[in-house]
Image (cartoon, rainbow, N blue to C red; front, top):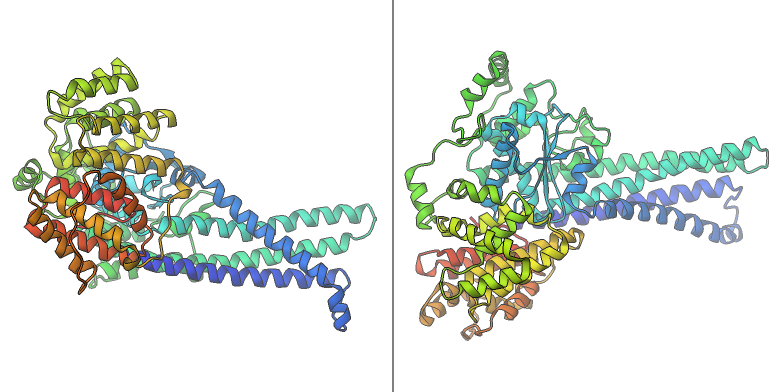
Amino acid sequence: MDFFAQQARVRGSSRRLVALFVLAVIAIVATIDAVVWISMGHHPVDGEAAASNLPLLITSSAVVLAGIGLSSLFRIMSLSGGGKTVAESVGAVPVPPDTREPQLRQLRNVIEEVAIAAGVPVPDIYLMPDEPGINAFAAGYSASDAAVCVTQGCLDNLSRDELQGVIAHEFSHVLNGDMRLNIRLMGLLFGILVLAIVGRRVIWFGSGRSSRRDGGGGQVWMIGLALIVVGYIGYFFARLIQAAVARSRESLADASAVQFTRQTDGIAGALKKIAILSEGSELQVANKQEVAHMLFGEAGKFNALFATHPPLLQRIRALEPGFREEELTPLAASLQRAGEAPPAAAVAAGKPGTPQGVPGVAMPPALPAVLAGAVVAGDMAAVPRFQRAAAVHQAMPDTLTTAVQQPESALAVVLALATSEEAELQPVQRRIVADAFGDDVQQAVQTMAGELATLPPIARLPLAALAFPALKQLPEGRQQTLLGALDALVRADGKVDLNEYCLARLLRMQLQEARQPSRTPIDGLKKLPACRDSAILVCAIVAAGGCSAEANARRAWLLAMQHAFPGEAIEWSPPPAAWQAPFERALGDLDGLMPVAKELLIQSLLAAISADGEVSVEEAELLRVICASLHCPVPA
């Protein structure tokens, strides 16, 4: 998927949204000013009258602007908790990590595989249990605080491939930076609608004054009515803005999902079922319009002006150009026949691959032996992204995937990932863990270290991604202790192993962003030449990390420089021995790049990594850390 181009489009949508919102607010302020002026008995007869009423207009404008601005800010701040706050606002409930319910287990498996494929931590998973329609959304400020929410209708009506297509669509919003824009839209809509709410209060107050016959009630009532009318008219146009912004992104998200899963049947099948089933994608929750712009399908019955998505048939034809509407009829008949079959038979008929110990959970068919061998060997370069993620997920021992579901055992797994296999270092590292957490945790870490002996190297960071939702539940003090212990384990031998550093850096950054999601950096404006020194250093560290000989590292670095700064003569300088602090400062600088510049940098890094024709686990993990630091997905 063209993440960088889509991120640039989202920025353009944000600018248009701000411009349209400013125009709407100006129109609202002008209308309220006119009503206040007339209701107070003032008329622009001459210049002196107009000048004498200037303080009244300034006060009126200031009150309206403050009301809209503060209301929008209040709503956005109320969503500062990130994706889980948005999910809970529509009545969604979290899916337990250790659930044994077949449908929920399948949902977790699909979301975990998509997260591994995208190179992001597993998001919080929510379900809207009382919603029979087929719908879903992703919310949050960044991948570190994202929540993916699906309706019960998705679980009841979609096959595994179709559910996978829907989830991939939602992950494209996570990766493209749409989620922050979605939260802003929620705040702006609320800010305009609050005028109508205030208007109703003002009318009530004016009616009370009239009943007391103390005068002024009619004027207050007129102002209140104006606030109601203008508030709803403003909300009408804000909904138009909401719909226009959403429609422009949904088609791109469909295309991104296809590029992500490498098949159209899944997402196209989900859209066809929305068209066929009576519930469609409609939601029952009262505040559904507030989240309409972030859903997979329409929130309910709609006028074409307010449609937040392109028409269903148009979306289907974009995925399957030869599709005809008549094809829905036999599909509807087959669904009806399937619905008449016994539930167990229906599960077995279309969902092969039930894992041992979880009856009825639909898993993908067995992967080819070459995939399994590629996982064990760590040579996954030729394997498509989604199949690679599924293979890595299946290669993880059940004891480890179970352990990362709970905060304390997930903590032990992550500490075990940072421990060395060298016998002389183990007593020192055991003491570090015992000093930080006690002997019980130290014993658990030893046990988990034994389990990790069978884990393919390529699965190390994906396992940490699975542990992330549980680690977020740890108290902040315990999270800080964990990060300090990880740093101490990494430096126990006086040198920094690349794998250990990547693990510690990734968790530190993601946990910090999860604690304060609204402070996640937004897209920068800098071009690559403005960050020349940082780009040179990062490329040198990547080149040196993938090559044992300096001559080979220099060659890889030169290839990166040809991509980043073509035609320029730049002198090679090996990275410093203590490279970690300069590296992290450079990543902070590069995170301020505009999307197109980030794309150029990533392509330059790929040129350095592939210079020797191989991609090592260390190179792959370092690239994952760099992409996470730049808030962009790992390239395919």
